[in-house]
Image (tube, one colour):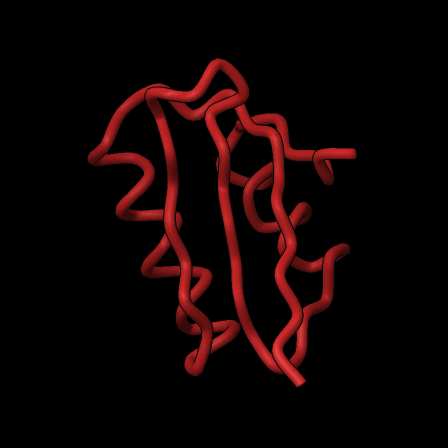
Length: 71
């Protein structure tokens, strides 16, 4: 079963978003990951069979950016 999680971030630049996506793919190799930096919430969207929300947030915050599940 595929799980989809959407996160609100403050990532502004495509280059940084790509770097975060590379790191997330190491954590979740089968996932589909995308950023929508044009959205006001700078959306990070992840589709995967298994997700660990806490690890995703920890990884993004470890790069100096805010990250929270979009409610």
